[in-house]
Length: 97
Image 1: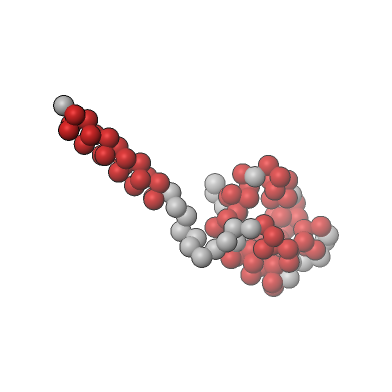
Image 2: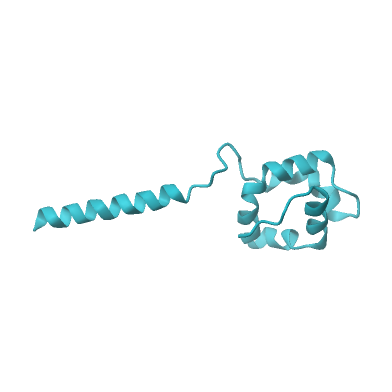
């Protein structure tokens, strides 16, 4: 009886570990930091178009955008008209989170 219970616990632990591994983002090597998007500040706060550096960083940070959108502090910037303008100018689709 103890062995069956022990095997069940190990199977459950293995299943949880597998689910955890599956949820790891594919964005290996990308450091999710909103500060990486500092080059987009001028375009975000004015009517100026985004720079090529901004677009490059936005493409690099694309796997992180859903996390930024879930952050209450950053959400206001992600949903602003300027954010949509930048995404459109940089030809980056809005993520489906």
